[in-house]
Image (cartoon, rainbow, N blue to C red; front, top):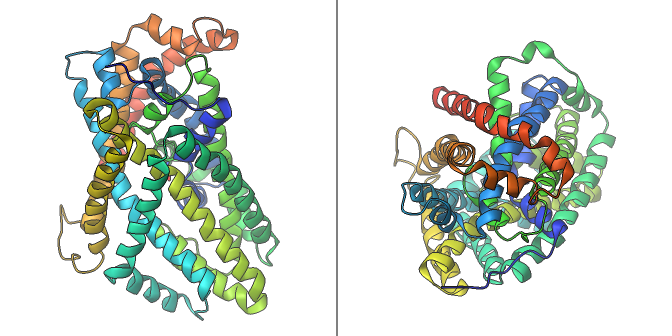
Length: 454
Ligand code: PFF
């Protein structure tokens, strides 16, 4: 059945959408923390190299599949390798983003809850212990987090059901520039705080002694997560890019935006953390414990300014989470529309119900269901571990093997070089081909083993 597909309007729309998927919580809390712990500027250099030599080729492999077939994950595999076991890769990459979306939506919901608090009451705790116990109470109480999880997913559903152009493209075109403006404003505030210079030093002072093999593996893993690789979101979004668009330039643009945002986020967060006299910590704790405490502490000296920055900060988090979440939502919707013949609206409702249910169980695993353990982890922890440690890397490895070793080289070259018309792409194709075939597969296995043994 021939179905007319909606496409993104042009290059900037495509880059905004892809960058929207990539830029998320990974850039705001994970990257700054990793930089500080793993050698400051030295880590940034390694991260840059990983992005260009490893993650960009993997990104392009996924993008090439989507762009060439103009189909979602399952349809793409059926087109390029009909009747083979590769269809399981197509299915895996429908399921894994939906699992991620389920628990990502829980954290997205917490961010809306904190945004609400920053608007209505602000943060006033006098010590970090009080902030931490408020956070514990918030996430373990059953109803409020469930309410915000529902709100977050409803937001995603509304955008996705409006379509590729009037929903996803429009939302990203507004949100992405807004996100950059907000994060730069927060960075200016943060760097101007008294005592911020120590935080700046934390990020820029290179400490090469901390560059160990495990730090390199961590940089590879972070670039993988940050660029949303291995779960079909890049493939699906690339299938909405016009056939005459240069996929290499689009990929480069996306990686550059993602990297830039991560760096600015580092300078927005760490100086404030140091200015408040706190040792930097990892995980959701940074966003929901450390930062509210900083806002409370700074509020004592400049209440209005601090309250305003708190609101801007949580707006940033909520929007960053939204732009990533809709890319995962879209993978499932594209599958149901293209492979099962459902209308976009009906597909959206089904994906909403499925992810809401799994997300609700994840949310309750901080409270009433905290006793339920899978491999020693709560349900939320298990979903997170399963997807970010295993399914993402496994999917990424299979995509790379598919493009590098199974697809016809001339088809890959054709796609990469815009049919031989893009001269710069022609010049770098051999390097891309080499990285894809010989560097990416062992590197992904290293990331996988590092995650496994961690
Ligand atoms: N890249 C996102 C981040 O850095 O927060 C996370 C993510 C989004 C992972 C979309 C996977 C995905 F499909």
